[in-house]
Length: 408
Ligand SMILES: O=C(O)/C=C/C(=O)CC(=O)CC(=O)O
Ligand SMILES: [Ca+2]
Ligand SMILES: [Mg+2]
Image 1 (cartoon, protein in one colour):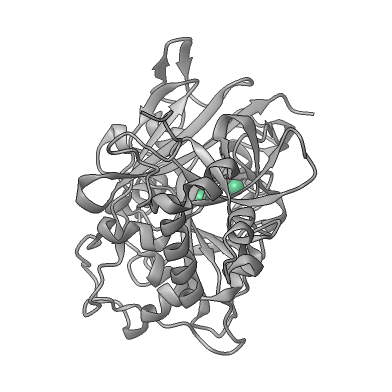
Image 2: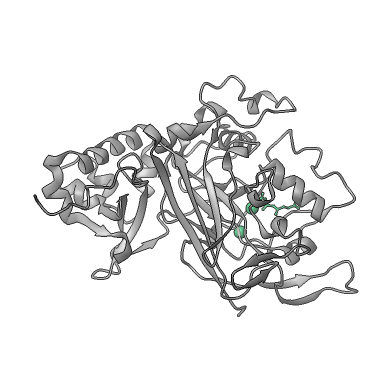
């Protein structure tokens, strides 16, 4: 029998041919040459080299240093390229060409795979919004009066989006608790995470033309894990009345792998029942494809799982968020990225932030190395996730990880 090929995957491998997420990598031999890669099992296929070796018409889209050209090429190209890639990693006759172009994932360096255009972050989990409302505004209603009428969001800082594995410097800033007579300045003492899912826009839209709910798949290429690092002490003091600013803009970490929406067809699921009928541009009741995604997220600090937030519980869908953020005529650009908002389910162990898990520090959680309220220097936070795929096989969403280093 011949030696085992990296393309002979164990049954149920979450990175099988049903998945094929995209990323950008360099090798130790050529650390300056960024290349588009597609993950298969524990290997990265040099997608551009494969396209050239096989004389593929998609070499123009794949033999590139990032995902930009493929993102801009649009939905038909996304589908056709995915079909070609599927054939390259599954048809035995291609093996002699493909096998030499596979690199072990552990041997390559991954990079941010796209140029981030604009970055928006939403607030779409009813459980998260209710918890945060109770913590930050104990005297008011937990949900603001607009919450069930529109997906609340804010514009974040595109330039500080970093790829998984990048260290996060503890931010400094102003904070003032009600007990303080005056604000103080210093490193954040309430550094937190937010477990989220990010959506990557490929196809742009025209200024002045809203993108309707049913055009979601024409514009959004794929999704990935996102950690919206948040300094709760800075945030609580600065956010009234314009919303999050420096408490969140110091870094946002994203997964190195983007999973195409087509890999997640089996994960589509209906969002929770709406208790308020949305305005027509947000009304997805008659959509044939359910708007939610059944993604099972896991949050670990220093390798210890602290939460398992269920993305299926999100109230507002990614399609509704896209429709809302363009309904005023704001245009989309290739590389626009938007976050779902913190994912928190109804149970305590399903909360996607330490703010909620520890109730703003009141109830510390236990880690093997001691108690935590918020993050300490040296802590490493890793989000992982999977989704149901075809025939009961899981779709692996990879991970987004980052370690806290002391304030500069
Ligand atoms: O309710 C507030 O004042 C703010 C809550 C957040 O932290 C906003 C945010 O980042 C949205 C989210 O991730 O759900
Ligand atoms: Ca957030
Ligand atoms: Mg952030």
